[in-house]
Image 1 (cartoon, rainbow, N blue to C red):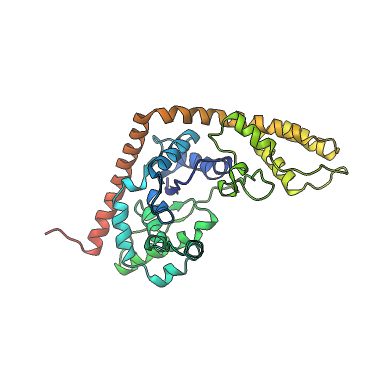
Image 2 (cartoon, rainbow, N blue to C red):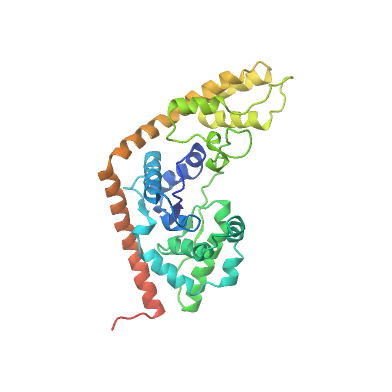
Length: 331
């Protein structure tokens, strides 16, 4: 059993793209690995230093992940700011992180270009905080997307630098988690690209969407005028709908609409109606659980309190040992 650490951004509600991508793999990981999942509220301040409603954002994300299947009895689920040891390790790692290497980070340069009036120290040292989040639990594996691969490489750099500077073999080199299969990519409803909130509200189906909203969004999905000859290649918007069918509907349903398309008799309205109902059926149990969790403040408090206790137990051991390695001693 390996230790796995992954952060969760408190920036919005889960949509089907998130669920069939990272979240379903998190659910599988918690069955076989020692998992730490945390809501990265400190990280959110690097781009939103004065959030309007940070607590509500954290609560919403917590509810979403619990409803989707993360089990606090199987994995440690906690809020980053509930574990102050993270900030101490962040400080200690910062002492050996160099300005030049931090300024060369691709995500820093990109965000500095987009928000020139908010290039703060937290944005610059984001990879150091990420490293602290990971190695504070001495994680061996980290499930990361393409946009985080450079940060994970820097985490290895900081871990190795600590080991080298203090002549110890203390921190392991965390590697990207290999799910053993290609992640499912859920396309959006706007005709191109992947599903995501940043592409517009109508592009994504959220786990919290009620049935009437799902039907409306799916019926507005982009299509084309239809095939004009048998077995005609599909346009990107239509292929996106068939990809959604392949993930969310039964094989018989997919086969039926493939046949209708290849015979040039397809009616996109019928396809969309069927797809919407299949999405509603998948969403229903998760949405119902969300509505229950929103009312259960006692349970939510128990989840984050217990998660913080378990995470701090691991973090305190690491920080205590790191202080001893560096040379901090009590009189």
